[in-house]
Image (cartoon, rainbow, N blue to C red; front, top):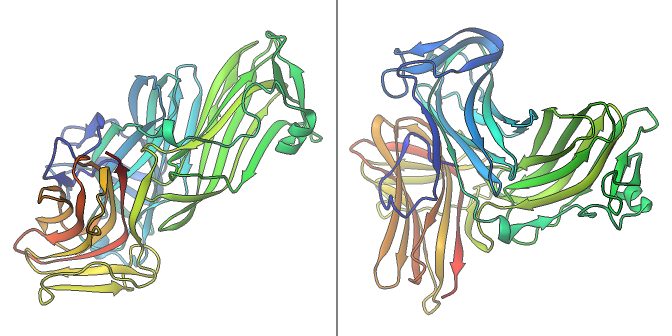
Amino acid sequence: MTIKPSVIALACLVTNLTYAQPIAELNFEHSNENMTVNYGDITSITRTNITPITGNYSLQVNAHSYFEIERTFELSQTFTKPTPFEISFDVQLPKLTYSQISDNTFLHTSFTLEFDDGSIVQTYGSDAHIIPPQVQSIHSFDTRTTLPKNKLIKRISIQWRVHLLEEMPIVFDNIKASLGENHGEDSTVITHFPLQGHFESATQAELDKYFIGNPSIVTYPTVPEQHAVQINADSNGYFKLRFEKNNLFLAHSTPDYLSTIVSLHNPSSESRVVRFSGYADYTKVLSGTAHTITNYNTLVLAANETKYVPLMLDFSDDDDTSAISAVNFEIESNDVILLDNVQMYSASTTGDGAITHVSNNYESGQVDFSSRYPDDVSISIDQDTPIYGANSLKLVLSPWRQASYSHFFPWGQDIFANQIHAQLDLNATQADYGKPIQVCTDVYYHGGERDSFCEERVLGKGSFQINQLYTLDQTKALYRLIMRVRSFSSVPATVIIDNFSLKYWRHFN
C-alpha cells in the first residue's frame, strides 16, 4: 500500500519508505481525468469547486443509488517478479449533514488487466472500504493488486463500485497510482499444486484424485516425450476441469498473493474460447475472514496455439493472512483443449522471517497505549463507533498531546533488524481541517540514536490507515519501539484506532 495523499511523510524521507514508481496522479484541477461510467443510475459526473477535498476542484458523482466508475492507466510493461500495483484516493459524502443515513456506506474496488495477446482478466475481493455516517469527514483509502510476471501488460483499469443508501453526491480526489516492489518471492514461495510440471509422471488415478471433471493423460502433440492433461467433455457435455484444495500449508511468512500459472494448448484447427477463473477463502489476523476472486473475461486460443496464462489471487492489503482455508481454479472451453503445465504457489512481497511484536484488534479489551499526561489525554475502549468488530481504542488528545505504545527490548539481548512494518487503522472523529494529526513509529538504538518515521493527516475528520514498511539501521542493536498518535497543533483531536500491529525483520550481524 502507498501512503495516502492526505498523509505526508515528515522524517527520514530518503531511507524510511520502500521504493514506489509513480504511474499517475489525478487531482481534477483541470479536467475529469478520463474517468468513465460503467453502469448505474448516475445523473452527472463532473468537477466541483463547491466541496473540493483539496485544491480548487474534486470529482463529484451524483447518483440515485448504485454505480460503477472506472479509470484506465496505460502500462506496457513486463515484470520479472509479481509486482504490486497500488491505488490511493480520498472520498467524502458532502451531503451527509442533510441525510437520514445512520449506516456505513460500502465502496468496493476491482482491477482489470489487459495483456498484449488480447486476454482480459478481472480481480476483486470481498473486502470493502467503509465510509461511516460521519458528517463533514474525508476518508482516505488505498488498495492493491498483484501484477503477474513474464506477461506483457498493456493497461490496467480500476473500478469503484458504490451502493448509496439514498440519493446524494460522492466526491473523489487525489487518486494516485504506483508500482511497488517485490523483495520476498524468492524466500517465501510455497508450492501448492501436487503435480508440478508437465505431468510426465502423472497417472490417471492422480488426475481423478486432484481434478473434478473428465481429464485424461495424452501425449503432447509437438513434443512426443511430454505428457499433457486433456480436458474432455463431462457427463453434462461441458469441457470443464476444476482443481480444489483446502487448508493450504503456510510455513513461514504471511502470503500477499497466490499465483496460478497454466499453459494451455489448442490442438484444433479452429479457435477455442476459454474461461479461466480462481477463488480463495482466507483468514486475516486481525479482522476476520474474506475471499478473493479472479476471472478471465476474454481468453481465446487460436488454432494450434499454446498460451501461458497467469491468474493472481490477492489477499488483504491491510492485514496479514493467517490461513488459506480453500482455493480452487477452473478451466472451461467450448471444446477439447490441453493443459500441459501448472504452477501454483503463494508468496509475500516482503522477505521471510518477520517477527510480529504486537498485534491487537482490541476485541479482548486490552489497552496497550498510555500517556505521560493523563489529565490531558483520555484512553478507553470504544464500543460506540468501532472501526471493526465490537471494540476499538479511543484516544482523546488535548492540543500537542499524544498517546503511545512503548516497548523496551530486554537488557543484554542484542537484537538487530533491517526493516519494521507499522500498521494502524484510524478514524478522526474530532479534528480540524488543516490541523495535523501525527502518527509516528520511533525506533531507538543502543547508544542513544533514533529513527523516527512520522506521517501526518491534515484533512480533518475521517478515516485513514498507516501501513508502512520502514528501513532500519541493521548495524545497531534495538533498544526501544514506540508508536504514537499526536494532536500536532493547537486544537484537540479525538481519534479511534484499531488493528494495531508492529513487526520487524531480524538481522544477524
